[in-house]
Image 1 (cartoon, one colour):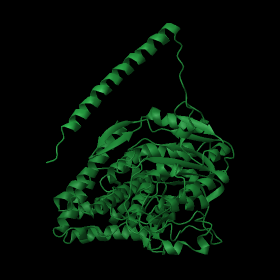
Image 2 (tube, one colour):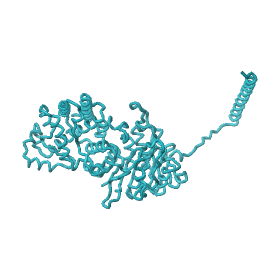
Image 3 (cartoon, helix red, strand yellow):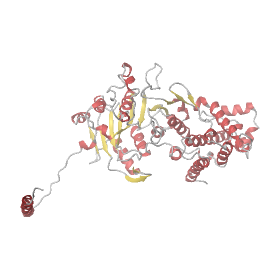
Length: 540
């Protein structure tokens, strides 16, 4: 029996094969390569998922030597009856849209056009469930013309893709869960989710950080949870959170200004059996035009919020619009000033923090990645936000992470945990000394072991004080420390006393005296040398 490790290896090999096809047709490292790779991968996944589901329903198909050929013999009415039994997470494909059918027709004239139209039709016919929407209500469908990115030999390019897809099948791994698909997804997008993406760059949150955030937020059984990320990226935080709660016990909501990120998040949702949440994935500007609202038109409140927002970004083009009566409560601490130079240094994460605090339900919880400087800043918006967290008793704790936990940035980060029901003590953890440094590309990266991850999680959830690692403090104690959330400022200063005899004391004192006399003698010699040198100085 083929093992999960072998399937993982085969899946990664398919991804490498698709990238090789792109490279052979001049698209290696091209800005459009990720669109082709992710869409082709998704088409294959949906094709095989359809095959898997219809064979579960119909033994006739399961027992056939070629299920695709057998299905072609169904009448239109029988085919419709079959597809009505599928769950909403399964895209419906017609027999003419199967990969096997395209493989058979690959030598026809204008094959690239046939290939593109097939994908476009699949997208159109499944748009109600699988489309991402923009804040303006436009639908971003599953697929687009793929061959247009190739300058010539488009038929050959599409044929090469079909021939890579035909001999691989996902059917044996649909029973796999989050851990398997998280690894595959990260491998699939590893070359496309970097800080080379321009102004609105997507950053991949390390799984260790995402895991810690999810397991510290979710304790005990949760049902019907509304989970939100206002800067979702490709969805690592949301996937970890949904997995911790249970994919069938939560609904995902997100917004991100990047269409690229929204498309990657959609793919992540499909892989992780969260298709029911795709209609809630919005491409748009959360800070300027938050999309998700309740039936009364007010901003939606959520049970859980996770976020790794961009820290600095030029939002001067619309910052004046944010300073309005409607936003007074949402941005209670204010809006960063526009610097005369380096507008890109505007601290946009402070806007996301305020938005998240405003978007929590009365019993809501949140975990937000922030630059570590935020937790001790003694003035400005930073300080006002921390004051509100403490005064409103909505702070659960803070974990200061090791340096270089993100390979893409040298900024030290901490995770702020909010819990609007936490009226008791707060746990502050200094995990900066944990982890092992490794090389990742040109960058240094700190990796936490499973044991170190568990230490952080267990310490946080148990609210345990460990010497030089964690403290448990009251809200009043935080006020006395000028609202500092740095664990190190609460650690006790300890002085070690060593018992010595009178003789040992006299011996140490004599040693100090001897050393001091030697230093004095050396000082006198230096004084004499300096005087002599001064006397020998002459005007030239």
